[in-house]
Image (cartoon, rainbow, N blue to C red; front, side, top):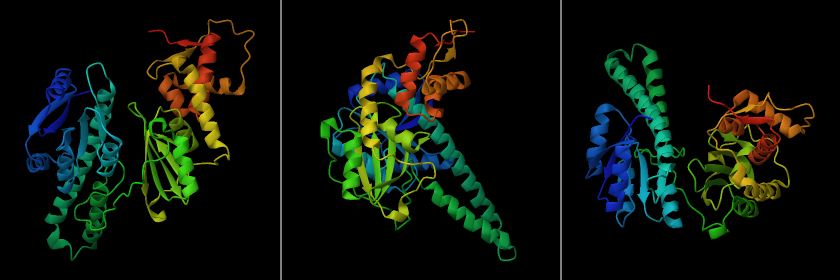
Length: 371
């Protein structure tokens, strides 16, 4: 990954400074410092880029985040530092903090993964900014022809719609300062579970209370972020990463002690997914069973980055596979990489991992050899 250009806002503790220096030495970040928000947006406006702003957790950090958001310009905020409370996570979600890095340090690959994803988002957002800027320049140049040529009116209308899309953050919440109808997220009281919080309890609370809105779920590891949409307590959509529907819900069940936050919305604001599929009556119980099973064999789960292949040199003469194992074996042959097998196979993650472990123990598959 190439260095991600970021701006450090405000004072930094010795520990924070040491970690940032290490990130810079490892060529993960290119760090610039700023004393106020205005200078950040002035610099980035000139190059039509969306800034990534780093803010360390401190008594003044919430005020800094609010100030960045009140500026009304698109930005990605990364809040890092020592321990964060549940209220901090609620504040981060409400004010569209892209990532919260709790106690980052050397040897922790969470930050590198987050910044790698963020670099791709910044590239897309900046490219979009350039497109909108070019369209606006064309409109200014064609102002004298607009009355004579109706295409300029249509182009102006399309550009306004693009600008509205441009003002959406990573959670799809509008943050256009000019929009008087900015949606205010109203978080519920802490959901059931507290230190032993799990997705099932949060979903049951939404069903029992017949809530309409979005349940945000954030685990402890990088990439463990998802959301489940409800209308009157009924699930209408679920997503984590590129995964949607019931598979996404079952994946969230596997996360350890996730933070669950709920935002109320009107039914018209809640997206309804065409990929949800049927939801079994006992899906919560099934998700909890998957969690118990997953915890039991978690130590044997293959890392997502390794490649597997069918062991054609093994003795397959007496091979007997059940339907799930055969399904997963086909994905091994097609995709190879564990993370892709788990993402692209439609079976629940827990069943895929169980099949991979069984196939490996039976010598049906093996780690792909170099070359």
